[in-house]
Length: 525
Image 1: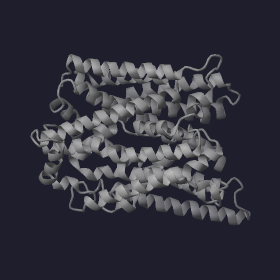
Image 2 (image 1 turned 90 degrees about the vertical axis):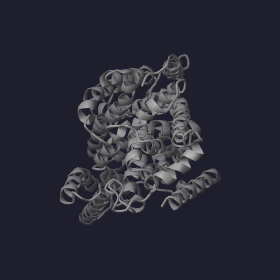
Image 3 (image 1 turned 60 degrees about the horizontal axis):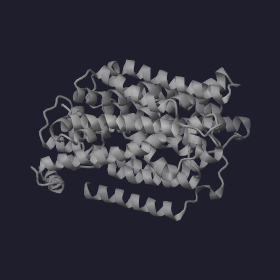
């Protein structure tokens, strides 16, 4: 695909705009030196709409635009369950998890584990998350985005990754979360509008120029199998989305683990002005989540109906950009894709730096580090993380057919353990530190064993089995320790009655989102 001069101007102009905005919002008032709260939590001053926009911009990256469109091409609308279930999960996190986090005054998820359990859990999970962000999250976003960028600009994947990394570094490393969050507000606008334009044009192409609505109707008639939200066992992709498990099984574990206990997601919420602001922000993000399948899944289905000439599923979205989007709009559509990549890259870099700086460097390497040193270390870690991701991305992911499914499966090895640690840490005062450590250690081995013993079992079902095993482990171990010691741990979370109260605006928004989600499943059952 070749961009016209106008497309190039739009695309390059967008990159320059993001860098300029990131630098401008990063400036501090005269006489104020940026401290760790400024750098890692945006001075705790984010309003609800910035939180919601930043959450979606950080979440929707190339793995959705390219990876989920590829899964839309292969599987169909069913893959959108990850988005629809996420909308409900965001409401649960807003009501039941974040009020506790904000009450405890934490900066990082490992810090909560230290407060609830001990430093062993904090350090081991901190190291794990750093490795996950660098070798899974950063690498997949870089690689999938570079895949599209290389097709558009006719450059190598390595060159494309270096270019993306350079832009992300240019605006995010200096300003920290403040630069990331405020540029995300701009990026989510480009992401949604630019993505919608591609969807409308793809549907119009399906209808032969009779409009997007006619194109959608034709999709329903031409490829009805691509609109099954719940797959049956005869479907060749049943192992990826195993029927009712989507609604009542392992997908909840994946979603709650991601949205409730994930540093680069929760970090935005921790930067809120108040609990009310964060709950409004998450309900806004939940609403946007309902729109995302229109942007990232429908194009893949349209590409399938158009008999896209591709060699692998993840080429569906780049094929649309190349063959369907006209000159003058390609730059905007491509800017939407790059917006998704840049927002996720900058978010992951910042969260990796936050965990390393506060949970490794300050906690163990230099406890007396001053604010200036913490900010400097954070910037250096961000830079090192993106450099490592550039080096390992292609060797790790070059042979994968559906990278979105690759991400879900291998993060699923740890999601059940993380969920058990946090849910029992938050809501069961009898949970002991030793039981939590045993659960953390057992998480990956249990997942591997279940995978080996039941290789034909869908990975979402495997996650459910592992969750039950780990739940049994943490309960039995904790009760045994409590009986031996004769007491329960003193560092349990004190939950007050008023903590989970929500206002009318949040309640109305939550009801609307639940009803819309239910309607979607009823219509496309």
